[in-house]
Length: 410
Image (cartoon, rainbow, N blue to C red):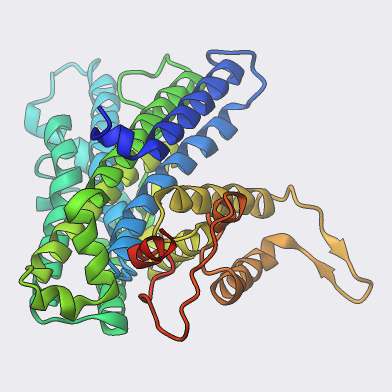
């Protein structure tokens, strides 16, 4: 019994318990299922925050545990959103078109219905024909499969090319950023097949459920996001435990030594890169129906940089730190940018937090990097009386959360 996964990782049970209590609390206070103490818009904000926590876990796996600073994981997040968004937009438009053509004297042919749907969707970019990328847009099952396949395939191809060339460090980060920028610029084009800068909109309206209020739909997505976060946390904790977790930590701390020990470093890195891309795709597929719209700006490199900032602030190399960082920054950002934070008049200048929030976030990242490299998660170490070992001038590994530090304390 002592050797079971949960017994060896009690923090997983603690996290799942807290997540369950949080989900129950929101359910009891929501407009749809509770005392209406929480608005529908805030339920959506909380649901989106859970999705951001899930992609933060993916980022912590690839960066905090494997040492790959990817500045492109929000591209996978956005691709997952596009895949589910295509079905939502197609199916909703189909229902509208069929309803409008139902009263015509001559029933429309299937091709006429498809042409009308294409005109409705792509008329904004001066087209009416369905691009090849929409080939499976009429099938929910296939589009949900593509939520995993497309991000995973892109990560597989990119990772195989990069890792087999042994690109590491800042050069790999630049490559991932270039990949994200190239994808974003391509999607901005009207002939990309995804409506260019207009993106996909109206995603909050589930096809065939027009009579269901948004308060109920928001709770459905909130529950789905909570379930995905819980399963994602368990999966990530299982991956980093045991021998596999020790190997990827070793790759983070000293890649050459792990390679000399006979391990396939490139294989381990590729597995983590693809796995985290698929997790990011799932998070995006749940996020954008709650946001209601997705466009290429969501995939811009700055979004992936923000993701790295969240993980650093929460404390990389610890899964709960990534969740804390993403939740904290997301909710505080919503408060500042939503106009809820009061402006500060200084006489000669008035600080409006909508304009200054990004500056505050950047300064927070710098301060955390310099003075609190363990992030907010490091506060748990202080509470438990855990201190960094005395190194006597000898480094024990570049990561503050490295396994060597824990061993040195025992």
